[in-house]
Amino acid sequence: MQIYAGSSNKPLAEKLAKLLRIELGKIEISSFDNGETRIWVNESKIDKEVIVVQSLSTPTNEHLVEFSLICDALSRGGAREITAVIPWMGYSKQDKVFRHGEPLSAKVVAKIIQVNQISKIITFDLHNRATLGFFDVPIVELSAKSLLIEYFKIEIAQKKASEEIVVVAPDSGAVKNSTAFASELSLPVVYMDKKRDLETGKVKVVGMSRMVEGCTVIIVDDNVFTGSTLIETAKELKKSGAKRIMVGVTHHLYVSGVQEKIEESGIDLMVVSDTVSQSPSNEKSIRSEKLKTLSVAKLIVDELG
Image (cartoon, rainbow, N blue to C red; front, top):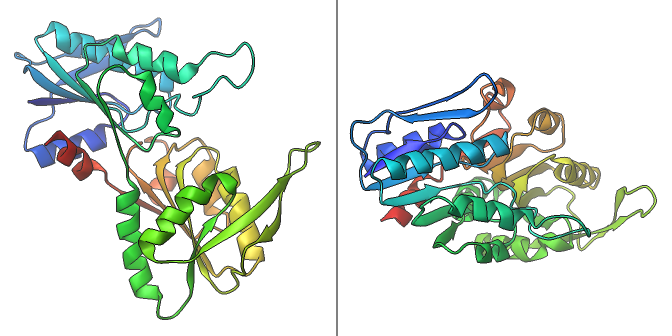
């Protein structure tokens, strides 16, 4: 078995290769002067079973094309079983036709992925599990929630004696996941009630199911895009007297400027997984004391068997 990495998340591919005790396959990724991607699998022999690791993160379209070209090169070189590890499934939030005239983007991308001769797909924490139905090849949705739960269990063990800890569901859409997460940690849940001004679009907190003054608060979500909802929620919780705010998410998309906003916000700790790799230009977030990264590599290896 060989493992190949696209350019989007080579650090995760390297961790997988280390756990599997195999070397990362040699692959050269470049581009022509007109911007077209150029792929060369520089191996004398390509195994029949291969793994391709590629998160469909920014720049999403480039990484999607890159992934497809890598898979085609491997198939032409002799690979017969390709396991695609796509930790972050780009376009997964576009899982509905929201307005007349829009495409069903998540389904279109699923078709593009499956043009390649793929035997199995492994991904993490989709925005909507219904997206699984867009795929005809076997697809496994893993979750990084177990990593977050174990991490927060340690935090709770260290702090529970001295302070009250609660899980906050920032809106109605988060109630189910937040309640399940709180149950795993044996913590109470606080529900926030928000209303949106239909003219300005601004969201205002109009109530909470209980007080959070003096509490350490945990908020969980699947992903961070702009971070605006989390930052505003943290602001309101701090206004209400929350002592410390910790956030756990699977996918941090590292959109430009977002981590810098988190640094200046009321969020004290952001715990994320490595489904998306940080950009080399994101040096500030790499050194951030507010950011803790957990690896999903072992979960993927366990699924690979």
